[in-house]
Length: 177
Ligand code: IMP
Ligand code: MG
Image 1 (cartoon, protein in one colour):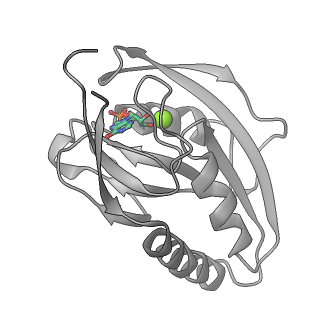
Image 2 (tube, helix red, strand yellow):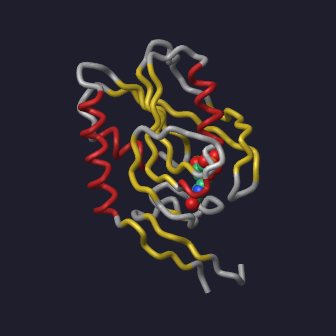
Image 3 (cartoon, helix red, strand yellow):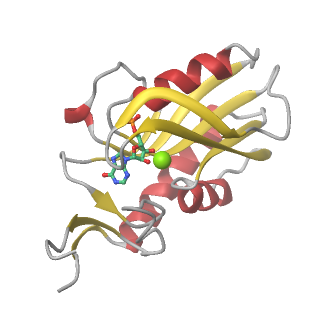
């Protein structure tokens, strides 16, 4: 038997929501430039799609963070595994993340980013799982709010699998695995 994946948001629905977010960001940053920080690996599909829909000038950078913890739960202590290429001092930064769960990872990362003197830092998350929140996090742009279910696809993984699915689905693990 294989893991079961029930579609929550299909590709069409995701792309149409990302277009709306891109439009809103373009309006909010009118006459400015934005620096998108894509949090690897999960946010990569979302960040690329989003960047294409933003009409103000976009700088695009990557950061890879690992939060100490097990596969499905973060601890809140974040290690920067790969840092940005460019300084963010004076920049209008939008951190693009796949999902906000406990909130610990972004809470910790925002402290680090703010200490680097950006003009502003906002958070854009494809998914928000508010039932699981442990630490307060302000999400400025949210794709979809979801229930407390483990989801995969469109960049999100379970043990590095399923990132390439063009949709987001709830995964039910094969118990024989
Ligand atoms: P937080 O620090 O608990 O908010 O952790 C957020 C991170 O946990 C995300 O960047 C994901 O890597 C991971 N995560 C949380 N929930 C899910 C999920 O439902 N599917 C896949 N990854 C998840
Ligand atoms: Mg992640």
